[in-house]
Length: 269
Length: 178
Image (cartoon, rainbow over all chains, first blue to last red; front, top):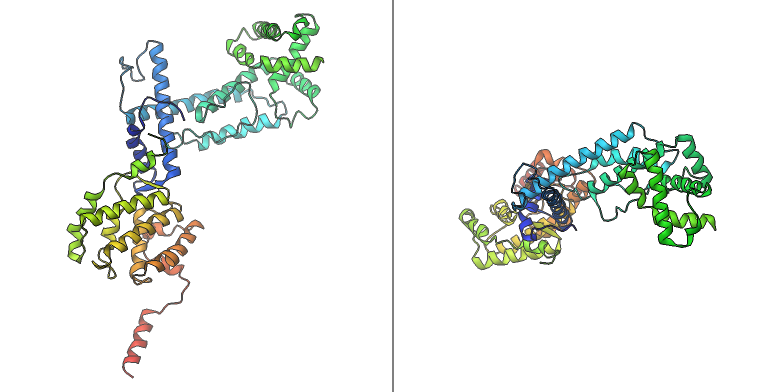
């Protein structure tokens, strides 16, 4: 569960409020399971608020309502309500990124990517309960991305996921559909059914081409640190040349350095 | 505080005052609870909620149970506390069995109606027959009780062929006049 600055006793009235609203004020009791769900919902909401306030404070800004006293502690109920508003805004932001990506989205024939993005995300948007269960991710997000989202849940996870896929889509668009499918088919003829990250495969192919052309030396294969540095440079060269030095993309693919190194080593053995 | 204990702490909210307040209404039916008896009922409520893995957030359902059943033909001062203890247990059990699909008042009204008519004050019959059958119907998707607020619902699920009231009166009259 997320860490927040409020004691559990301070959260009781907020959890009680949620329970009453959920039952339409027609039930004086709920199951342990539901009560636990509401407690997690309250903590998730307050965490969203506190995270935003901390970020605002670090930037020297006031709180969401322009209050200069961003460090002032407000009642748990108010923090929760502010948090829900922040989460609702985050859902909108996620959908904006999603819809922008959809305009040129390509699954390159991979069913896992297609199903996760074209079927999964709309289901999330349909069923996500920002008030009573904001901590629920709902989806399994089968298509693997290159960032570790295991510690995240709910809209935080899905938003980070959609941003990751969006970065990949921009990267892959630089190759064109047929070239990507050519690379994937060379990797495995079963690429339509595989559950692997497509952009990593394409990046690996590009890095290997750079090594073959002698752009970078392959002599550092055995030295992990040196090879990783070389890989980082290759990725930077690629992104600077073809993607205007997109920092987000650079940071994203930096997550895959170790994995890339291992796969290239295996391939060259 | 351990995270799991907060569920029990919520339930221990003092409701004794509210339970004793009901005496002002129930005394006209010859029913009254002492402070000791109120504490017993609240204590048992806490235990029942723990057993049924439920949490009460606001006011307890116990005063509502008291107000609903105090005019029962089958409750007297002799069996008042014992009956309330059983009704409380039955209530929370069936909130779970009915998957929280039914509101508190709908369930209480159904319980009261069956207790007075079909069950003739028999709590075991209420728990094991009427409520069990009704719960089964609700789990299967029945929601007609929402329009009726739990009243007049049992007849359609009753598995026991019962006397028609007029027929019963006729049969009784015939027996008496022989």
